[in-house]
Length: 247
Image 1 (cartoon, helix red, strand yellow):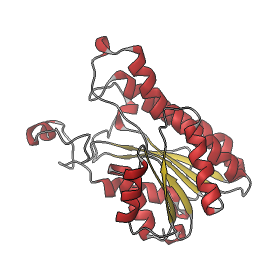
Image 2: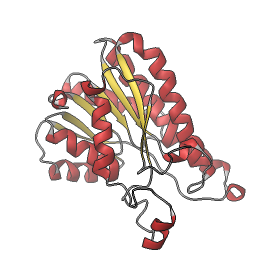
Image 3: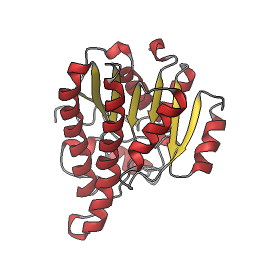
């Protein structure tokens, strides 16, 4: 994956967890990286933690606001002169029963998990078409592939929609040499899973017997960004320790 050196990649939601692990790995490989978070102060701090320098750009935006996704893509293009890769990692959700789910919460989840990916992808896709190359990777979830057992119905539905969006874009963009794939992590050792007790983790029945490390998910993302996956598009790569094998 050394071909990622000097590539320009925007990673949304990259101040912590999976997004930060992806950004950090890209920096190590010599890519030029657009870091994104809701707070510019926090994003700037992460930028310094990753080494600073001209190869890392700090961006802040609330992606629930419709035009902000396209705006940060434009900022990356203005700063670096183009864009080669996009990782739609920004997202959120929380466990909620179906009967208690309110419409406003549903809409907010769709806004950050699906609509933000739509707007950033459209902006990146339009730019990539000019050079007839590029790779977009969407961070979905194991929740996309069945009922919302561990999260709310809003989260599961949003991640399923993200998988569908991935395949629709992959089909259209292929003739321009642009690829679009998704990664569906299972349980990852981040702040979203910090409250899981050891007993609860064991009860999940993960065949590999542990949670994923963010860096392990990042390696899958790097593969899909790189030329090592040059003939792969419209696919979903599960990184879940075997939790979903057999459906």
